[in-house]
Amino acid sequence: MSVIVLVEHTGGNIKKKSFEAVQYAAQIAQQTATTVTAVVLGSIADAEMEALGNYGASKVIHIADNRLDELHARAYTTALVNIARAEDSKIIITLYDINGRAVAPRVAAQLKAGIVAGALSYPNLEKGFAIKKSVFSGKAFAWVNVLSDVKVIMLMPNTFQLSKTDGKATIEKQDISFSEKDFGIKVTAVNKVTGEIALTDATLVVSGGRGMKGPENWGLIEDLAKELGAATACSRPVADTHWRPHHEHVGQTGGTIRPDLYIAVGISGAIQHLAGVNGSKTIVVINSDPEAPFFKAANYGVVGDAMAVLPKLTAAVKKFKEQHH
Image: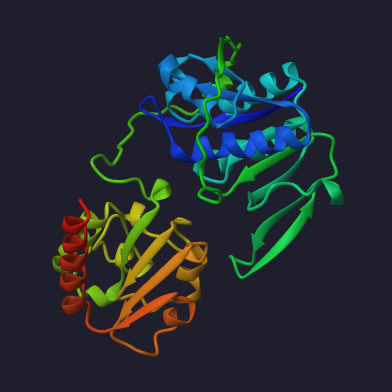
């Protein structure tokens, strides 16, 4: 009996948020006197999978079917359900992201499991199996008590700080018998953004809104992001007017992120945008309107024209880096 974790990787590199999910599973395994089994699907090197031991996995089950290099929700579900049954697992953990949202509900349905989407805490075993999650677009929190025998938890990424250990994991190769239906949706092409920090994995984010006045001014956002080693994001109006690509849009109808630092430039702070970023550890707002709603949610605020503030902030970051290197 073990806690199962679905591990995500891109191009054979395990994502930081998956290490976090394994570490989360390890804490639950300790609470429930069991072990962690990480499930890795698709093409990846053994050395990369061994690193999962550093975060609490005692075993890695690897299904090296190259068809699984891309997300096939049915096939991923088949793999997880088969492994969970073979391992007699009562707790299955995925991330609360695109992959997790496609796979976890299917797994829960097949295993007749209760599910918590967007977990923000470890289970409170003194109250049954109660887990904290955000509700109403992040405006409140709720404790969900999972009563089913099998439980599926979708962990909100960037909730817990990573802590590396010298633990080791054994790797076990397995084959799963998939049906044609598992690959019923054909992937004809995958276009991935390269050379940028992935927004969902970023701990630092610089985001721009309509206050940037036009796409020709976006270099100011990119210059600051480059100095900070940050990802770039935008508000919905910016994505809708095609100033920036849609994958950078964060908010209620876009992506939800939880970086350590979120710098919002020229964004008014409508409730729909806040829903996607209010899990950020620190929020800095730069806006020329002192009445902008975003200032109420900010830890720090600068009232001023972004065109004047951004170059000075970028220069200050550059100077700070030079002094401390």
